[in-house]
Image (cartoon, rainbow, N blue to C red; front, side, top):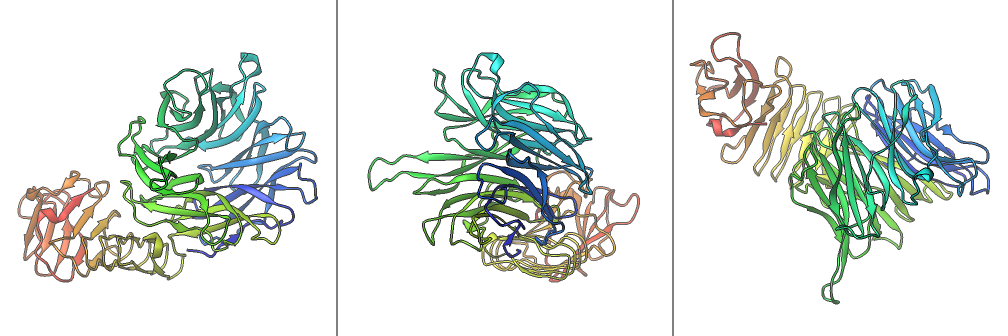
Length: 558
């Protein structure tokens, strides 16, 4: 976890509306809008800056776009497969109250501009909330809400326009949402693990249809633009939602909800819920409470980490003063809470708002938000990284997050008395779970894993071989499990290991062609044999120092 930083170098007047994207080198890029350095609160521009995984600045603050009398506001950013990035935003030539258009600026991996252009090709009125995401091919889709004056309707709809790998627009605007007699706004787009794109938005009704005041709708598109599922409702009620793609190919949706009480002993509560969906948009989990309080929380964001955890962040009434705090909570990949609610900010003496999240490529996440007063002027842009170490030899503690990932280096990572998720990644690491049902993954290198008390899971999801053999110091066959990734151990089927595929002996050698996991009871060594005794030697996976008695039921194929 890094210290909180001030991302903006220009501190006069105010900066707000940050967004964030992770980069392939483990760092992240921030973008935000900033007032011109005068007392003119009518003119704004978009800025950006790059940071490494420790939240140390790589570049100086740079201007993405702005005009002397114009207003460029509310930017959103997506990283590109070639190392570049695209930033979209709303822009007016007539100041902050002027008619806005959707604009986009694209950059190469070295930061060179590919151009700035108008994303709206049909002249929509009242453009709001421009967002963008990238498909695996490098094509991007910008989405925005607006009113088509030629359609004879005063209601906003959701539109999109494709951007090519070269940063230039492709084709014309096209309508994504239906419901032409209702207002649709707050467009958001995320990329799913299978390459599809999920576009979601808020629908407000004022006619007679079986919807509540605000519903969340979505459309799923293929990278080529083919509609996978069109204009379907994913959540009812509330007026805010945020989504993230999941490693399963589906997505997670965070949605606000009000629960009305009927008297003083049963007051109303307000909060956010989390629900998981498959790649077709069908719910795969119940609705999960994130947090409910006695005041209205706002501006949620959600992201899944490369290690599988789901992080939710939002702003709510502060505990130290009358101002809002930015807070978060972490869940496992199935929606079970790992942490309690924790504060993102170190500086909490004035308003903190609108947090945004990015999953870092080496593990952990980065967060950014608008912070009032942190830079000595009005609003400033704060940022911080969580849940990961550095490229050096770190001593790390899971702490309130109940998760921690090392990067390079030989790290020592300590859990808490609760359930923790610990990841070594590269290097020869030491992971100690302590009490609780812990999840320990050494990653690459020869790691030393200690679960401590509780039902622990020791995960092997990297290809074993010389220099990548872990030692488990305290495996308890009555409670602990060894999890093997079927992407690596490809001859094994998901689920509990079949009894016929396990063989324990004093030699650790296969005794028939069905054997896949071999256990040497003398040395405590575990081997993987892809084809029994027929071809090739077995590969050493791990060593159990206590030499416990093992059976097939101790192995879970994931």
